Length: 458
Image 1: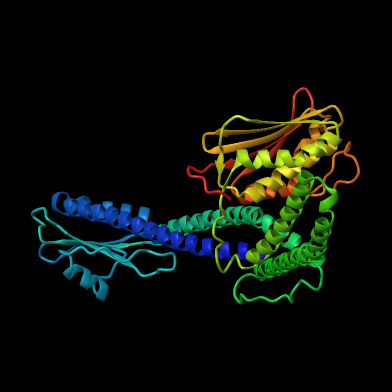
Image 2: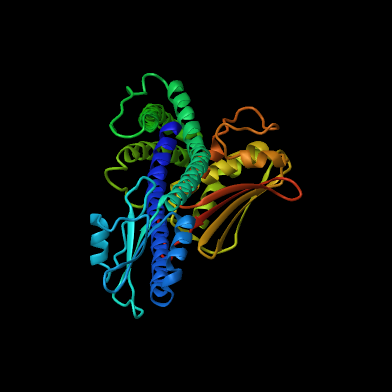
């Protein structure tokens, strides 16, 4: 591809340079011809003045002039008599025509190195007593044509040098331009070769025109796109299958809880049943989300109703309080505002808080304290879960939202996908989740969510 690109650029540059060189060479020939004619006209005028004022010295001057320039000279008086002639024949047809046309001076055609036709300059004598006579000069063009040839050779050398320089620049620039394309083509080929065979469609080239490398790159990108789409569809099917499979055990659990109602306290029974109901809603949400994602290109989903972040956070703190008591961790809730309406639905915010509270209860350690705060800053609602536990090392902070990453000091039992899922949920609703170290020790999980002016209960 690089060779074809350089060849095309060089051919185009050569065409442009040749056109410029031809124009410059033609103008150079015309300019040199014009200068030669002007010089010979001046010589003819000088001989005319000599014929009228010093006729005795005319032939000597003409002889000296011919020896110096090799130009023929014919001088006719007013009565048509020959005053001087050297290197010319008055009887020749071109000379007779030049004598007749002496009062009209026309610029001859430009001289080119291959032109061997003689050039005749006829100039009338305007000085008495020879007024009405004529001076005809047969101009020798060999020297001028040689000069034009030399100038053309220099111009050709300059054009060739410029073309070579341009070719070198084109080679370097094309390499610079195509290097990322080559790397991308290699990476795409490697990627398509590692994709599962059952999700990679047969390679085809829908585009018929263009460089073969670009066509191959387009085909590879299409294969990768189709494979990614197929994998995304498989992932949605997996989510749907998993959520559907969990519904039956969850329904059986709800039935068994009903049978345990007599032996449980009312508060405990209500709390457990509410958690089962919430898990059921989560599974229903997974099913709805998977189906909606599959149809996202066909129809936009209506925006979900928002919630009051203070109420949602208070609910989750109440749900997790027993777990923190068992872990010997102090859990407190400190809302800094009375209400914090946000565009995020309560189910999504509850999932995000559950992830943060679950991690704190599991990893903060006995004797630590966890504080949940809700505040409103400008156009955002900020909910944070801060604990005074051991925390994580600074070099692991940025990795906590990476799927399946678990800190070096983390206990067994976690999957490493809680915080990534929470970050994805926040981003899906226009928010931002980030994790940072607390001072002097511990961890702070903060989620910033868009605020709404009018709260619609979710």
